[in-house]
Amino acid sequence: MSFSYPDLRQLAADQQAVLLSEDEWLATHYSGQIKSFDDYLKYSALIRPFIKQLVHNILATGADVVMDFPANTMRQRSWFLNLCREAGCEHQMIWLDLSDEQCLKQIAQRRLEQPEQAAFDTEAVFHQVTAFFEPPTADEHLNIVTSEFAGDARYGVKQ
Image (cartoon, rainbow, N blue to C red; front, top):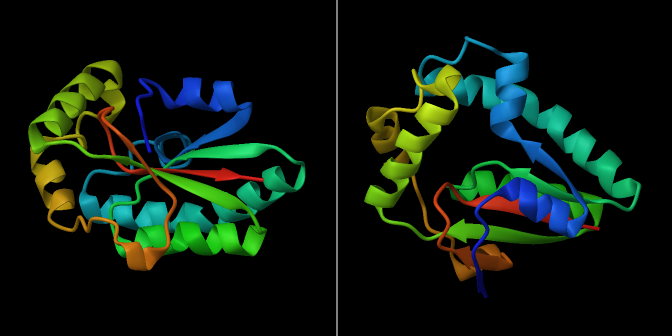
């Protein structure tokens, strides 16, 4: 399956879902504290228990959730799958199948639109993160939707 969404906010609106953004959570709770990839890993791990409980609570109301979170590694995707299994919900992983050039253009645009992230959203960090990327495999049992919109692999969960 393939689709193109220029904006996850629009996807959430179209699905009448709640949008949760890792970037927004990190910026709200750890403003100015993420200066390196190691900082990102630390703070990203700290918000996961809160996100998990929030997703479960939202799904319990009957609403769907669009999660604007990276799923670049098998470990990250496993966290999402476990979250969905525990909540008893369906999921879709939106895989943005892009070249490095397309991703770097998106990062440059994001640096202009979100200058507070400019110190971390760099080409060097992109290459550091990309070194860990693992494409999804059939063994992971993911419901994959492929998109040509720029960004990271993202997740959506459905009641």
